[in-house]
Length: 197
Image 1: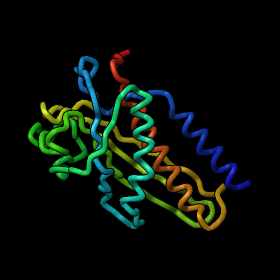
Image 2: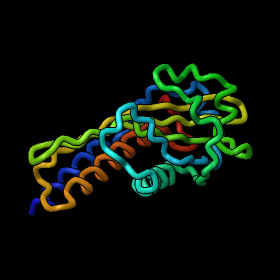
Image 3: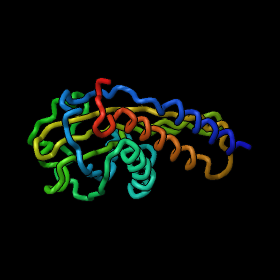
Image 4: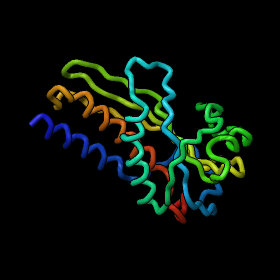
């Protein structure tokens, strides 16, 4: 029964986040940009505090399907690449001011539309009655032009009280990261859509 209510809570949070929201930054020319295939790079663990270990390969498995589904629903095609380039130049804060030279050197040279997603924070408070929270950010840019098109930052959290059993922490951690990813991709306008509409 505990698992049941935990998944119901996850479902309600995901449904509640289904409505499109405004991104932190959206290029004025986004609606006129004919984006073709988006290249997704490996998820970057950019946490400043790493109290909880997260296996990077497991992080990709948790996040990749959510991003792919979200992009497909918005009309985009997607490809994966492990070629990060100079991804360390992507600093967050006022990232709408990223230097064009930085963007031209992130990802594989033959790609144009590049998406990078960052795990900014992850917290877990235990035991029973605790909570799990995650913060994630993302940036989509035109690599060839050195132009940022979209950027957003999202947060998600769930209570652990309804989850029981030895694997409750893993279950809820995965849920929170996936919910946060859905919220993040939700603010990205669909292909050929009017971002102002």
